[in-house]
Length: 110
Image (tube, helix red, strand yellow):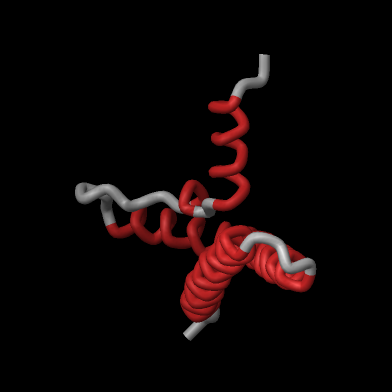
């Protein structure tokens, strides 16, 4: 049966991109660190635009929902909740864009 824990896990995986990247262990050699960094760069270039589109669609969704609820003169708490979720999505989008720019910078040959 599909419960709320499985649904929460899917939403976390849908919105959180940290699972893509691996950390280099302290005892890793120079070659292992370079391989891990190359994999992280490849994953970042490939998948971070997907997460940016997801966050951008959430920004549009929450702010349009807030404007719709506000124009219908509904409860101000609902408008505030939608606007707050929209701001959280904007912050997540900004963090993702900055991370993507750093990944692109490290992906280009010097």
